Image (cartoon, rainbow, N blue to C red; front, side, top):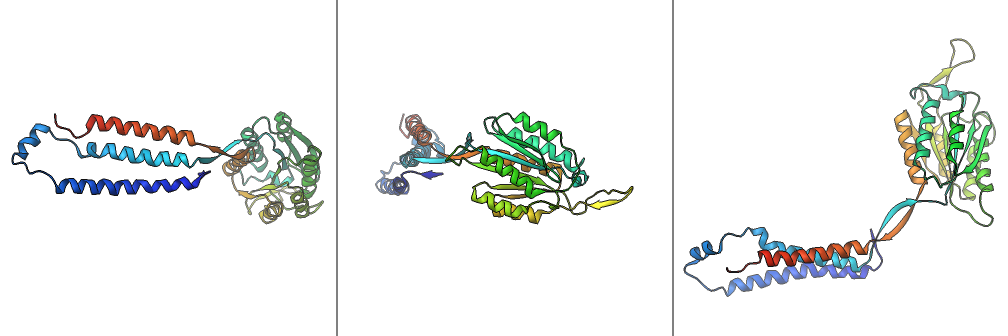
Length: 315
């Protein structure tokens, strides 16, 4: 929470000053109290009043003073609101290493599930595109508000081939640049999911540097565990399918994005959901003075009602 007029917060000092004044007044009243020899009888006649009733009106009045002071300071809070200007490109790896079953039921199936969860978190008005790749980008969908086009490419992926991460990022960057209005740079981002080391094409770290100059951050998700293997070309042979989180982390750092690692399908889905929520919204400061003003007035009325209802008085 922040305040547009923080100088008014000095008014909160009135609360402890009021408490001190009240304490001094009560001590002065006790000093000049009149002795009454039939005090027990008077106590029985007046009845027993719970201690909290005596202090409730004062507490409510002081709380009202504090809340109304905060209202004068014009409080603001930061909220997430749907962003209608951002453009996002998914870059998904469907190389042969995605056959590994260290992520159940296998990496590619888990990745498809996570990508669907990502899309579900995005507002429909956000343009979304996709680049699917293995040894080269083999499916490129320009950003569109029709997210069904992206879903179709995700479902059509088959695990096979090498890993050309740099070429895929280049295709995604070019698609985002082509979709920008002339003279404007609305927010854009790339979400890269890959599980293996780059085995051909351009250096993905250099592409990430170029993306940073274009103000396009790359959010990377490394999928899988180090002990994973996939079927080899010969019957019964197995090949290692080791993820490369170090390179993916460097891609994210260089481009101004953020890196994530996932070793199971639930973790992967949670990461994609978080990314969808993060990239699909923007931070906005909103004034909440009215809420504090209403709360302060309610406390003030409550203090007055409590004072009339339970105020100390003889019958």
